[in-house]
Figure (cartoon, helix red, strand yellow):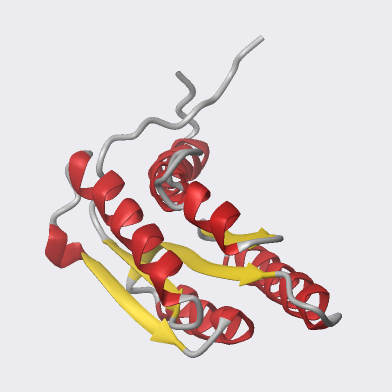
Amino acid sequence: MNEITGSYAAPQGKFALVASRFNEVVVDRLVSGAIDALVRHGVKPEAVEVFRVPGALEIPLVASRAAKSGKYVAVVCLGAVIRGATAHFDIVAHGSAQGIARVALESEIPVLNAILTTDTVEQALDRAGAKAGNKGFEAGMAALEMVDLLRRMEAGNAR
């Protein structure tokens, strides 16, 4: 068996972070976590660009533009959708997730979904660095790994 995995080595190229302003107290922590992961692993801060959008439903469009621009090796999508009293939560959570998945498949570069979908603000904060790790950090790490994995696949190099 030959198993191909990616590493966390910093690649040449830039990273786009697409972050919603809605639920900013949570999203800012996710953005910080993603930047921390990338910079800790050798990505220069100037190689990270953050695009702010109004809410989670606007993320896929900007992610698509970034992915198709050819300027970025990966796109990390960051947001927080917190359940309210209406079905709007389901529409936003489903629509943003589907849009991000479509962008990844169409662009063929790593497009990571770190949009939290939680029942409460407390749960969102827990996943943004309080008690349950930082999902932004995890998305940054996954972006590094996926960039390297896809490069290894293209080169035919398995390790």
